[in-house]
Amino acid sequence: ILGIIVDTFSELRDLKWTAESDMRDTCFICSRNSYDFEHHGKGFDHHVRHEHNMWSYIFFFIHLNGTKINDYTA
Image (cartoon, rainbow, N blue to C red; front, top):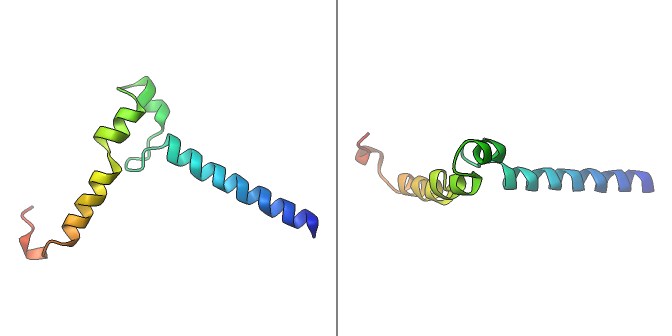
């Protein structure tokens, strides 16, 4: 039983590490890796802060959710 508990905690720790790594190294919007931006562009930090700012998308969806369907113009 102790082996099962240790294996389960090890698996949970690996899943947590993978999720944290994805959040730190992958763009939430376009799913591109930070390596792409560091070697071909202005950098990953610039990309996630200015080009694909997660909060801008969230506020946009909140705005759309509060807008009547007939008021859409495009």
